[in-house]
Length: 71
Image 1: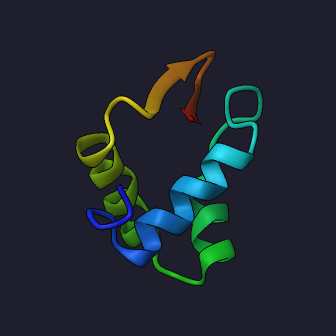
Image 2 (image 1 turned 135 degrees about the vertical axis):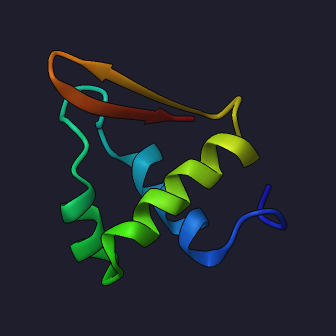
């Protein structure tokens, strides 16, 4: 997996994996601020993760918010 992911994708994946975005809604603006990148970079990284590691990440919409789970 590490060979396929960019540095940002790997960092975001690990952050998602260690966080509880199943309970706490995902916030792209907060992620962008945490990683000191543009929001669009976060959107692209999350989209890439769903293509590159589809069996290890789940993005879903629940109760008006986006949630992300990773293992």
